[in-house]
Image (cartoon, rainbow, N blue to C red; front, side, top):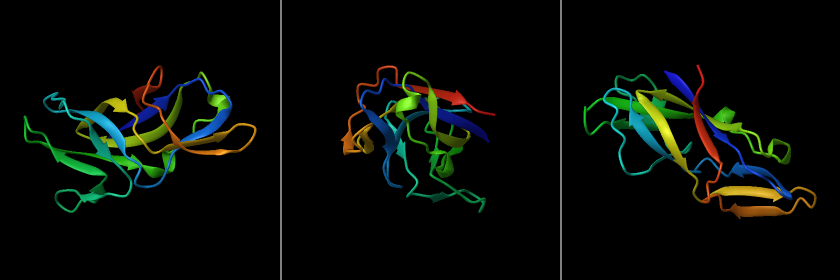
Length: 145
C-alpha cells in the first residue's frame, strides 16, 4: 500500500476556501498499473460515495479495476479525512488537498472537473461553481510513504 497526495498550487485573488463539494465529488485521474506500467488513455474517476469490495473479503476501496494488459486487480481508495481546502494563505504554495491509498496503481495525472466551490475572501460570498479547468500550475501528485 502506497499513499499519494494530490497537491494544488494556484494564485488566489479575493477568494479562499477552494474545495471539492460532497462525497459524490469526482476526482478524475489517469492511473498507471504498478505491475506492467499500462496507462489507459481514458480519464477514470473515483469518489467517496462509491465503494467496491476487494477480492477475498479484504475490505473495500473507492475503485477496484482489473488491468486490461496484465489482468492484475488493483485498487485505489480516497482517504476522506485528508481532504482539505486551499485557502488564501496557501496562495502560490503547493498544498496537499487529498490523499489516495493505492494498491497496485499510481496516479500520474489529475483533471479538475465540476464540483469545486470557493468563497469571497472578504465578503464571504459563496461561489458554488468554480472552474479549475485551466490547470495552470495547479497539480502535483507525490508519493507519501
